[in-house]
Amino acid sequence: MRAAWLVAAALGAALATPPAAAEQVLAVGMAAADLGSLDPHRTATTPDKAVIGWMFSGLVRMRPGSVDPETIEPDLAERWEASADKLTWTFHLRKGVTFHGDYGALTADDVVFSLERAADPKRSAFSSDFSDIAAVTALDPLTVQIKLKQPIPSLLGVVTGYQGGYIVSRKAAEALGDDFRTKAVGTGPFAIAEYKANQSLTLLAHRGYFRGAPKIDRIVYRFIPSDASRDLAYTSGEIDLLYGRQDQKWAERMKELPHTLVDVFGPTQLMEIHLNITRKPLDDLRVRQAIAHTVNRAEMVRFKGPLTTAAPVSIIPVGYLGTDASAPLHGHDIAKAKALLAAAGHPNGVAVRSIQTTLPSMLSGMEVVQAQLKRAGIALQLDIVDHPTFHAQIRKDLSDLTAYSAGRFPIADSYLTPFFHSRSIVGTPTGVTNFSHCAMADAEIDAARIEADPAKQKALWVTAQRKLVEAVCAVPLYEVLNVWAHRDRLDYGYKFEASLSLGPLITEASTLK
Image 1 (cartoon, rainbow, N blue to C red):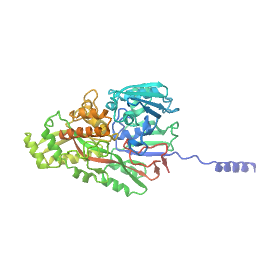
Image 2: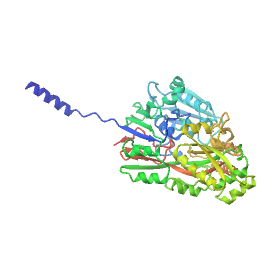
Image 3: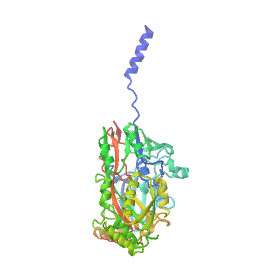
Image 4: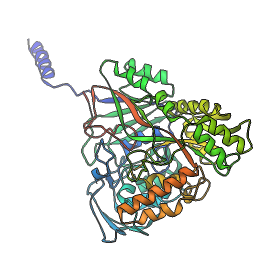
């Protein structure tokens, strides 16, 4: 009897004990064969940007779900002030912010290290963004002072949680060296736990995250380069969040799936082709004009689909502060293109070469461009490589024509300086993404960076765009919104309209129902 009573008591106690909560695991499918880099100061690829946004923080950030500069809010810095001349900025850090793992508390020294690292072309892909910073100083363990050489359009845009603005752990970066690429350490809501080459990246919730412990416990970020395989993994229930194809049919098809929500969000990424004016036959303006007249933007929008694509108005995306909505883009005219080629001494056409990524959203668009150029006798050779190799090779100046899709902090300078200023020409010590080697608008770009009058600043940006458009430094093709899909059981925890990291932010507020 006593034994039976003990068994019954034990069973009753077990039933009274609430079961342990099931681990919340978010499975993500990304269109990439492998990780490029988790070092936020070095990576520029879309697949890496999304996951980095979950791992790192900046001094300030855009409100989750927005890319409106007016929504910038405190992040690692709880407050800041600027001098009257806007040349000295002081940021006061939050207390108690900790890095992932055993790397301790964030201090002003980490911020100094991070911003100096981001400004170093040997250690950063975004050094040109920091060229106007004269010095970064730790005034005390929780206070950082930034001195500028001259006023710039938006210092807050430079130090926001995005690209070079992410703050890393000095101890981790120095201790890990080259291994920082796969073991990067930040202060964000998720930390790296395991990386399997060509397979997956696993992140764990950072329980010490200063905004609160994430509700999602684990993220498994799977590399699935095949569109068909990625879609199959989603429909079979293996993944919950899916990097999508930026085309109409894919978005429409995914909307028909049960318990599926399709995210179509900004900022738009402007896809344009940069023409290297130092290489034959593109050193002849008439050849560049012929290419511009051959491109049919309306056809590209129809091909990609109006749900996810729009026609550009300039070499800067629509909606950016300072975009010239009336830029003199060359209209589609095959006859004029052929006449220009003949006048340039190429009556039988020309051949140009372009290194191109396997990333489906970009490759499909360039295959359309290839077909369009063929109509005017322009043979475009596409040398297709994986996405990390694409980024490495185009920065070695190996293409006649470079296709590049990008979203930036939404002001004109964030496009003009990295893509069209002489100090950003690839192959130079401060080179970034000026693949065209154009430099004819340097004066206007530089003047706009220090112009205090908003109207005069915009006028300078418009003049710069017109010079660059007339010289055919780049030919805008189309603007695409970002497209992902997710199961309705995933709740982001905020209204999702846009993301600078080009993917949904998974934050401490995100949940799996």
